[in-house]
Length: 151
Length: 291
Image (tube, rainbow over all chains, first blue to last red; front, side, top):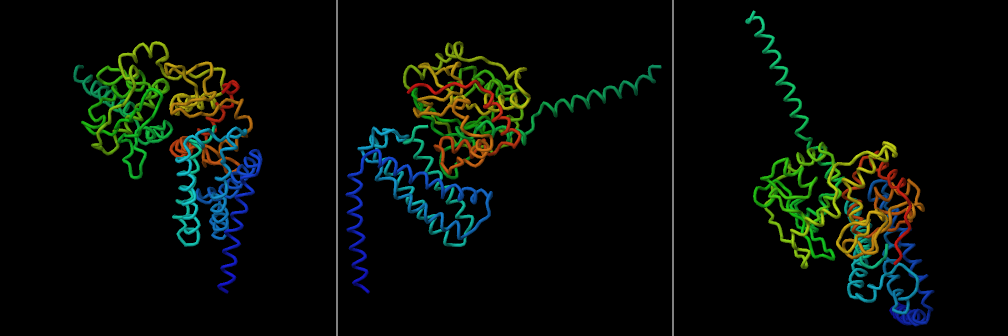
């Protein structure tokens, strides 16, 4: 049992290392395409949550949990795609992403925290808290788009 | 005979008094309507601090512009900290002419080039609403402006060049709905203050009105609202965006607009929101500025 956990852990660490390597070798245009795919999917799972938060769609706990979980995973996936090699690729990312990277990272970790909280809340029974948290997630999205995405 | 006229004259006087009362009530302004107009005007955006539990309209929001940082003042009826000593006429003059009660010019960070278009009746309702707020003692913070922009007397010539006072005049070439939309967009909503490019003196470029700006008031790009850009969205998408704050594909706008959606566009009555969209649709299509 403990052996299999160790093995899983090893595979996980090793696997993560591998995928990082693979990423470092991907061409800039591919990296951009991938990170944009992540952003697109965040929209796919966030949109329905907003409808729930605003009372335009019924509160379905299972669906909210599922979307929150997907969103939480996705909220971690895009950031290594903002690799300096992609700076001159055509995208809406502003140079500030690289010139003011500390602030960019502050936003990305804030989003990760907010989506984690959303997952936790979605497993509890407090619908009002979940709805408020959906708003909080949206505000971080928008705050980062303010500074780091062209309109 | 004299006696016979007496009651008639009294009756006439009574009628005149009633009429005066009615006129007075009409002129008084309706605070409830004013509350709606304040939302449509997005007043809270600049006149409320950007933090949790901030007192609405007690001022404090910073607006960082290329000319320096402005701080929205307290507009609650507090006698010292707010506008408690103002008269209704002072308030109407501030909106219409961009001058303080003491006659000095306001910096156009206060969007009076838009607010001048507000009708007297609406301005009175706004005034009634602001009078109804609880007075808050939060003190104003002085603006921090770069020379020479901080020299208030220079605002006089600026106004001469870029400011045309006077209420909105309906355009006969537009439908009634589009005229209502124009009033909401241009007067109350002051959308053009951010969505139009400015020249180096901070005057908006009229020929590119609402066509977006590569560098908006806070140095960030602002999107084009003319059909050149908006044609990709149908009315339902636009309505959904301006009421829910999310695009049809789940995308979230920059928070500067997110706040405008929460405070203003999502609060508009359905027919007003439709009017806004009708007006935007009727604008001449102007392609984006080359960047």
